[in-house]
Length: 94
Image 1 (cartoon, rainbow, N blue to C red):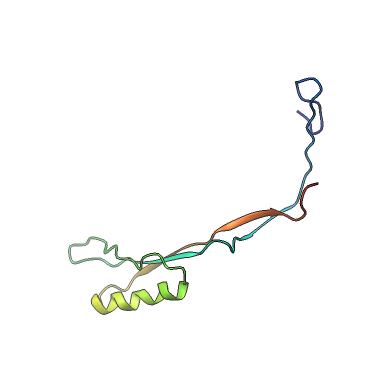
Image 2 (tube, rainbow, N blue to C red):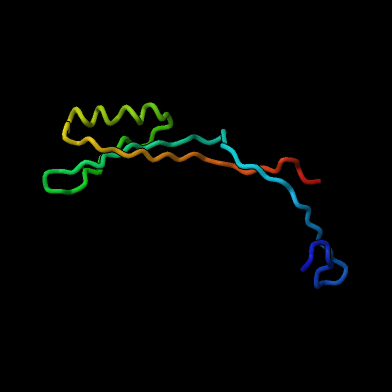
């Protein structure tokens, strides 16, 4: 169906307007950061310990030092971050 063309039901029309959209951070929701250990135990199994969910990235990035104090042979870590996003039109439809 073309834009603005009548629908199959007689007397009903729909018209769509193209809008520009943008995507950005959703400041109403918290970011979440988790640092996890990629080190191996003596039996070759992955350690799997992690910092737990932190809303402050710096707090999550300090966790490997705490973990390394307990297991100095574990030197490989990963960081997972969740950043909520939201899309909004550049102008509100009328």
